[in-house]
Image (cartoon, rainbow, N blue to C red; front, side):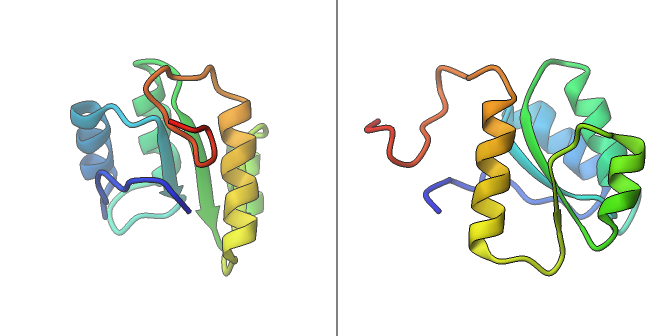
Length: 106
């Protein structure tokens, strides 16, 4: 899809630590992690400032109940669904000058 993965995390603490350390322009977070919640991790990460994010979940309604404006992709999903969700999340978030989107010519 043209994006570089800078980290993966299996737990809420790992996600917060990686995002704090790496400062990503985009996060794709599973709503349920092996330890903790992806929703809670993203909430904590966003306290430092806006970052485009997409939640993936088998229970999209649970995510939307907690975060009504969330961009959520229901599992299982295909590449086209994920690409559309990423576009929505990026459009809804102030653009980082460092982010190179596929097709931007950067």
